Amino acid sequence: MNYILIGRGKMGSLIRETAQAAGDEIQAAFDINDIDQLGKLGKAADVVIDFSRPGSLPEVASYVRRTGTPLLSGTTGLSQTDHALLESLGAFAPVLWSANYSLGVAVLYRALAAVSGVLKPDFDIELTETHHNQKADAPSGTAKLLLEAIDPARALTPVYGREGNTGQRRKEEIGVHSLRGGTVAGTHTVHFFGPDEELEFTHRAASRQIFVNGALHMARLLPGKPNGVYDLQKILFGE
Image (cartoon, rainbow, N blue to C red; front, top):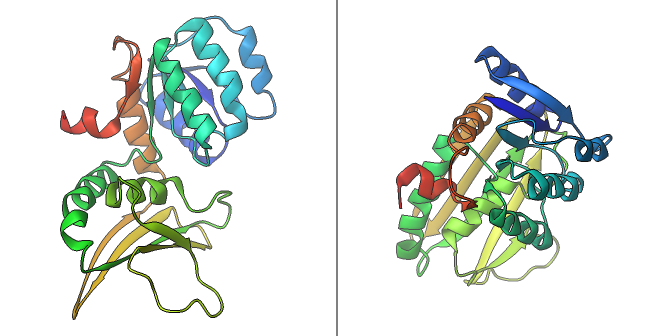
């Protein structure tokens, strides 16, 4: 496989090392400082892998529209406008975006979707996420992904931390709390607090390697697929 890599941070470096160790080739690599150079390339790879920052997306989108190269994106902190732009690229190439490519998180998403409807009437729900002290966005993309699993209709109101005299907790709240420190790769816990019982779901990432392995696995599946926007859950579970 041949890749164009967008992002030279920790994830980008791990993707490069892992791909090359597997015999794949990185045809070119860019970050926010030189992303304008991407426009000078023709179709040079099987897949564009983007783990950069939202500011790189317009140039990436322009390249995908022009060349039809499949796109796998793991960039977080995207706005609604950014997501709409990603959706539009499905007319030109196969596109896959996920905030988290871990198999464990994919299973957690599915589990939360299955149980939340049963518990929500009687249980208060809170979500905590912890990442390293260099992470730029909060809450994490994975936290937002889990919120989607818990509350797909967006009937609950996210409360991002609490301060001061907040009054009693309302039933329609879902608390979201971001912790930052050290070198934590990522820990996400969903707490269900019910009458006289508590239930927790936790996923801990020991390293970023799990995200890299999952992203490269999915990248190998994109070439040859019809143009369109693909969903990680549907690809994994066939639904």
